[in-house]
Structure formats: structure tokens, C-alpha cells
Length: 410
Image 1 (spheres, rainbow, N blue to C red):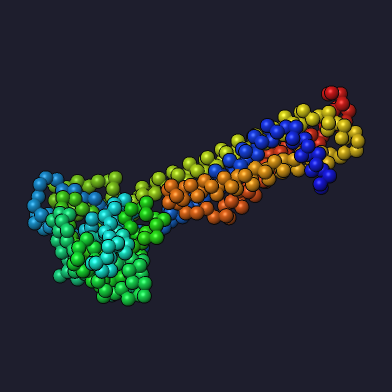
Image 2 (cartoon, rainbow, N blue to C red):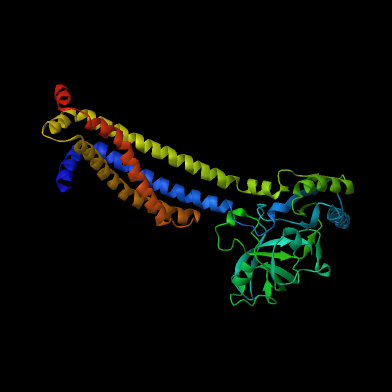
């Protein structure tokens, strides 16, 4: 093998420009494709992140009142709306809220274990709702109890209202009290007034999907507050298999209560539609990264084919001489395959360093996860196989050059 590599290296030194160009092209392709595949995997995993709610049976109505109303009038209308919704044959439950998972909202509060803390323990997403909120969302209560009707507070605007009791997610409870003793313990947010944890739910994703990769993605808390303002969301949970019926009946029932309202179709809808909209950018990035990867691989393969074909044309006399001296077609084929393999190995070694460097830059710049070496290994194998497949055609043509034909072309 070493006897064959020495003349190959000597030949490559005679074609430094082409050799370096292809090696750099392979290196750059490897670096970009590895990180692109990693980003695609991260985005696809993001698309399937569980929210912790009964998505299959949920719909959201983005309600905006028309005309000016007092907070008392709004509160009375909300109560009438909810009573009408809960009486529909296709509806299991309904609750008003200021937000929901995947809504894109970002009402977060700093949360502390003690009011004296100079630095908050964490940052939690806040949901407001009534005693029907848990059942409406379909979240699983794993400890403690739900709110009762007497604990529901009214808020006319976004003034500071700290409820005496809260329900938190398990992720938030574990962060605040790692020993598992969160139930019944106080937490503090925005003031020195404590809120007691009366319930813990298994999972409830934050409103803002951009937090999906953060360690606090599932740190949420529920406040027993009904916001009597000009706009709110009606979250409706249908009975199993009756979502389509609920989507037809709910708007009619609300209009029957009052025509002085506007529904925003770009915000509400079934939760399947909400999830589709929420992850449009992630889906687009995954598709874009896939297209870029395919184009780069195609360009790299074309470059290898072009350069090898050019070298075969230049070396026809040399190939003919080798055939006349006893070299078989297999020897010629192996020569070009080995030559390309050496170039590819140099390229993937350089590309591995580039891939890791690009990822480290993205980690510090965009807070992305570190690139798994599995992707680098996969990329190396992919590029080596691509290079060997690309060179196979020109190498086969070279192996079919006869000694007589080669010498006549001199």
C-alpha cells in the first residue's frame, strides 16, 4: 500500500492548486453540513416538544371587546360567556386566560424562595385563570389541590396583584425546593408578599417557544386571577372526538351572548393550528438547512467529478504507459480511488476542526447546544463515501483506457 501511496503523493504535489481546492471544499462542506444536520435535529425535536396539555381537544378563542366597557361590565359578560360555553353539548370545560402554551407571549416573573434574596432563584412563566383552568387545559395535578371559586381574584388591568395561593409545575417546584418539599411552601415574586404553593402539576410548557432549549422551559406557575380587560383568551376543551363540533358551536354561543366582540383568527383556532403557527420558523429553518446541505454535497460531488475527469484527461498517456507495463484495470481504478481518498481524508480532518469551531462560536453567540461528535462522525463517513462515489465514474473511464489508445493520443 505504501508503495502505491508514494507515487500518488508525488502526483498530487504536481497538482497542488486543484488538490488544495477540493480538500478545502470538502472541509467547508463537512463543517457546514455537520452543524446544519445538528440544527435540523434540534428543530425537529423542538416541533414535538410536549406542552403538558390536552392538545387534541383544545381550541382557543382570541376575544376582543368592541366599544368601551367598564371592568364590571366586562366581568359580568365573561361570566355569562363561560356559563354559555360550559353548557354546550360538545364542550367539557372552558376558562378565561391571559395566555396559553405556544401563544408566543412572554409574561414571566422572577421567583424567589425568600424576600431577602438579591438574586432570583429562577424565572417562571405566569398563567392566569379560574378554578376551571386545570381541567380545561387537561394538565395533570400530581400533588396538592386545585383552586376553589373563593380564591379567584379579579384584575381590571395589569396592576400588581399577588395571589395568596399558586399552583406550580413540577419543574419549578423541583428548582425551588430540590428536596421535594415544595407543597405548602411560600414563594415570592415582585413583592415581599408570599404566595403559598397549594398544588403541583406534572408539566406545563412556557408561553414563549423560544425558551424551548432553556433549562427552565417547563417552569410555569398558575395564578387564580381572572383579568377583566378589553381582550382575553377563552380556552375551551371539547369532549373527546367533538373538537370540530365545538369549533362550530363556540363562536355561535359567544355571539349569542353579545355581538360586540371581535375574534382574531390569526391567534386562536384549534391547538393543531396553534402548534403549526408556533413552529413555522423552526420548520422553515430545518427545511432551509436541509436544502443548503443537499446543495453543498452536490457541489462538492460535482467538484470531485470535474477535477478527477480533468486529471484523467491529462494523464491518458501516463495511464497507457502503466497499462503497457502490466497494470490492470483494477490497478488504475484503485489508484484514482486511493488518490481521492487521501484528498478526502485531508479535507475531513480540516473540516472536523472547522465544524467544532463553528459550533463553539454559535454556542457563545446564539446559546445553542454543543455539537455532538456523533454528527461529526456521521459527516466524515458521509463525505468520504460521497467522495468515493463521485470519483468512481471518472476512475472507471480511466481504467478502460487501452495502452494503444493512450499512446496514440500522445
